[in-house]
Length: 230
Image (tube, rainbow, N blue to C red; front, side, top):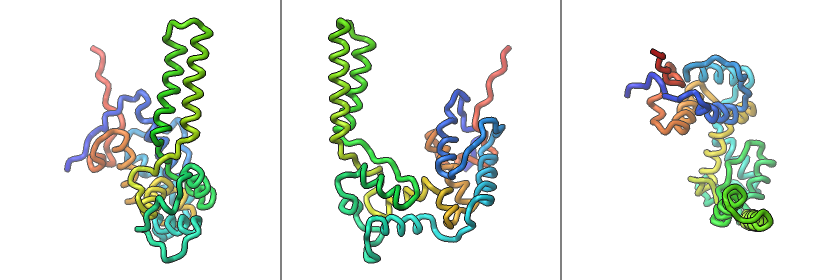
């Protein structure tokens, strides 16, 4: 499979989410004046950062995360990666994930909104639309917007949330959390090789661009070339 010369970003901020994901995943802070143009330069910087600040460990990151999650949940060795996650977490997902993050150190994956949360978000959008676009008299407009916003707050409060996509088992959650905290776990003794760094960078770039990660090579550039003015 032939890699792309450029991923085709326009340079109008479409790269920002990618670099934020790099910072979050590898637990580093990027300077704003870095003059990178290729994904290979990102890889080299992250590998150097891991070599300088990582623990040089050999433990599997997913395995390390699984043991931490199992211990934080108060489970014994009889519980394996294939154990269904929902009964272990309970119904109060937001609180459970917050407690797990405090007890295990890695940042937990975000839970998903349930139907009350989704409808609550729509209520907030309606409140903004009422204030911005309706022709109601000011008192009525404010009351209507406030009522819609209050309904949104109430729905979000009662929303029990849902597990992240693909998190059916305890092992699924361990894999997802490990992937999103590779730098932090490397500091604590997890293995993070140059090839693993590159695979993660490809995946993050592919998620931002909607392309096959294998199409991204070290020499692939971020931005498409701007046409010269005649």
